[in-house]
Length: 461
Picture 1 (spheres, one colour):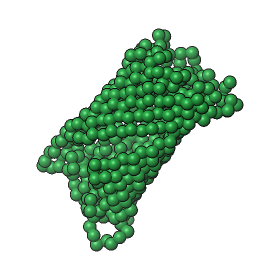
Picture 2 (cartoon, helix red, strand yellow; picture 1 turned 90 degrees about the horizontal axis):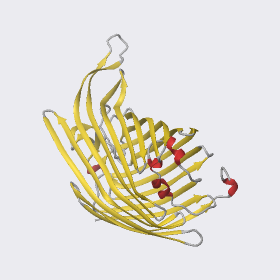
Picture 3 (cartoon, helix red, strand yellow; picture 1 turned 45 degrees about the vertical axis):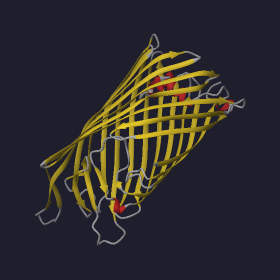
Picture 4 (cartoon, one colour; picture 1 turned 135 degrees about the vertical axis):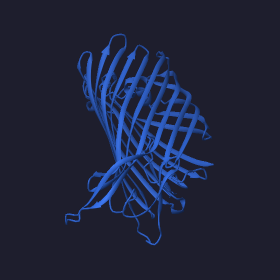
């Protein structure tokens, strides 16, 4: 059994007017949840902001090596839609997260939902305390340059650290940058078209070292897929090089297209991925290279959009394909008297093929309005996740497939006080089935404080 305790504190900041639901403000307009900065100009309301502080404690016997025996998480999140003028709307968000993990081993890479070309895994007999911090700043701006045309740009930046305080020690630094340029065309009959280009670069640099006794040999599994790969001893070369900080780099270049016709909305994103691990140079070693493709689709249909009731259906699906190859090289010392060391590379060896697909089908219902707040909200649906991986460890091939299907439901009832404070009680549950089985239930009572801005703080009357 795994015990989880979560505490939240919410703040809502808005102009001197009726209180609004920030989450509903985003979800009510599908363009605001799409990946198009120019479509921010479809935001027809005034400035609104939302801040959240949370604390989470995880403990118990049901955990993985990477999760550790205990984990404490501190999170802060603030985001806002800010109207600069009648034609310009900006969006900003800043988040901070810190994890303190006790007696953890397993993966040495920072956790992510994306497919990784390989994993570096240590045994549980080297378990130690770990700490992880991430900080991100997201910004986007949209400008309506003409009655039916808007342009926009966005930039998201994330930095992070991940470290272990016991041999074999690893110190990771993360830099993740996402940039995009977009255009939005407004069409008659509540319709529109959006298009954009996106570039993303993710670099996780790793340094390995020991502070304790050096007579012990530390082994790391280079897990290409399905816990198969190569076993490497810690030293001055290879994936766990003690002399150099080695980057795991991935670059994404892609396009995104959105379309809305009356009640139907569609958002499609495609990107191509390339990357490597090590340092690509004639005088340094690069150990791995990878390439793949990503595709994401979001469909939404508004069943009812009335003042007394809102009902819509969301369908989301994302697919990733990734191929990783091990670099083959020969270390050579120059014979011209300089004693320079250089590397001669040969044809790489394919080590793994991976495919991951996940998504959600959900129904959202809001009713019983009180001003701009809906006092009832029920959502339900199903989440799915499928991953198929093949590891090529000569002369064997190891293929494994995993799937998880999770039906879920959640209901929230809110009460708005005369002073504008919002009390909410929420309860729900989910059941994971397939390769992993788990029953989960949650209940929460939240209290939101509305902070009203002064009139002269607003960008317009």
